Length: 239
Image 1 (cartoon, rainbow, N blue to C red):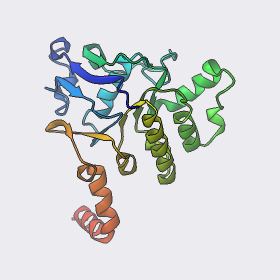
Image 2 (image 1 turned 180 degrees about the horizontal axis):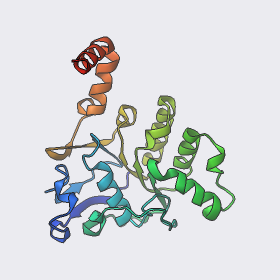
Image 3 (image 1 turned 60 degrees about the horizontal axis):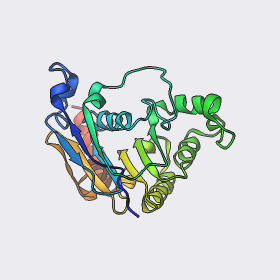
Image 4 (image 1 turned 30 degrees about the horizontal axis):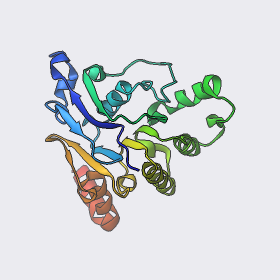
């Protein structure tokens, strides 16, 4: 069963101040709506193109904590969330979410600490007792219930093999009725079967095929002709 808890988002730019940095992000500025067509959607693009900014806004507008966790998490170690979420309208389905979380790699240490001290009901592991990659994967796989799962660079501490494990988990949960919205640079995760890929660049936000993403193309170039690429890179650096 394919369920889209969020079918569309709309941005009201009239409510965003004229001097806001949000208006300087080419991929975002001017985008009034974005349509989700698949249970798994990836945001792909270079650093600074607005992927995490929009993902964060969707998470906050959905009721999640700004630093991550489920909708039951309420804490803040440093408040630096953007104002975008106040101007975001979510077009939702009538389906009720039974689970979900917002995962962001940069603040996972804080989430792990708060989980251990405040939210652990005895069924969750001590994430600080595991390696960084293991704790990432266990947190991501600890959902169990169908719902909305928003992830910002979940591959950050995962080996290629663990990324494949995460891909399998995402695919399984999506087939059971969950929705995933994920910002990633991983060509492995971007290859998840049946996923919608939205590319962020100076042209805006637009659908992309896996083979057309920068992550795939650069990785492919490096693997197929590493010597040529390195020679070109370092000859330029030495001029």
